[in-house]
Length: 75
Image (cartoon, rainbow, N blue to C red; front, side):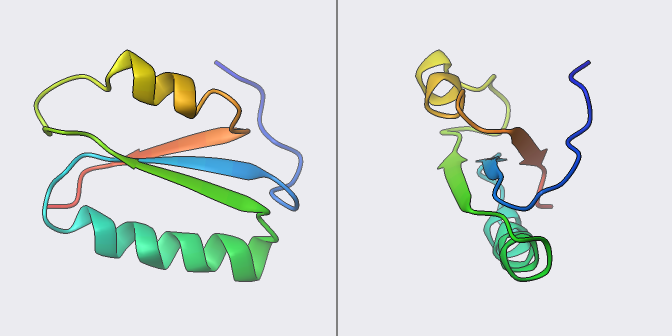
């Protein structure tokens, strides 16, 4: 398990959308909060092609520079 971040200020956060109907709206809300309330510098959002499959390796590579990654199911 990765160590906890000391702060989100200036952090880069990755978000993996599982392609279900409510995830985009949930991530919109979380992204706004992270930027306004926690000083996150950048949010990298990617959407899986299908909720039932693992995250493609190329997508994980795109998120490898993030300080933290969130994954959510938007049902």
